[in-house]
Length: 241
Ligand SMILES: Cc1cc2nc3c(=O)[nH]c(=O)nc-3n(C[C@H](O)[C@H](O)[C@H](O)COP(=O)(O)OP(=O)(O)OC[C@H]3O[C@@H](n4cnc5c(N)ncnc54)[C@H](O)[C@@H]3O)c2cc1C
Image (cartoon, rainbow, N blue to C red):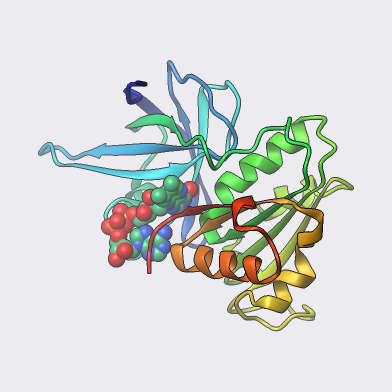
């Protein structure tokens, strides 16, 4: 039996705005054991009166470094995310526990093509996979479909553009407002979007889907309808309706 990871002190090193409602945080965690791309941590906040709140956050970073990267989208009226997006400052201390998750991970030794499908802040663990892929000498093709409300709401847009090469491509879907001249009108992913913007089921890709629960469930249903085997689709649900 493996014991639960211990709570470790995490000091905020940097906090930068990434979208109108989202921030990227770097946390230094002495004693961090390292993590795989796709894993997450639990973050614990403790108020002065001792009240504690715990939420899960995926890691955009992977490997052995002791500086962890999180990207947090503010949920209006949420308990924890508004604090992480608006209030926390470099030098502040939180606690983290992890790494957590053995199923929603990608490692460069996997030979098959990889399809990543992100909704909103669901990009975080998938970016970790794209970064790990870029660092490795994997020859597996990797393709990402990233659904965002508008271009302003995308986390890591510049980095995704820089990562794109003959092994890694990104397809964008805008659900509320598409850039001028964008060929696809704004709207949620549908069957045609999946067919036009993802690795075909016949190529038997490993598929990773992450985002708000409703997005993940819709995407997984569309993938199965498009012929992907459910046992090749891994999902991570961030919560919400
Ligand atoms: C494995 C895992 C990894 C996660 N990684 C990330 C991450 O990398 N970045 C990130 O921003 N969030 C991530 N989340 C979501 C995160 O854990 C919190 O749920 C989120 O930040 C809201 O917390 P809160 O305390 O602000 O809201 P709460 O006070 O918990 O909830 C307030 C209201 O918002 C709703 N709600 C909660 N979560 C969501 C959501 N994701 N979308 C829409 N409505 C929601 C609740 O149902 C409730 O009605 C992850 C969740 C899981 C399970």
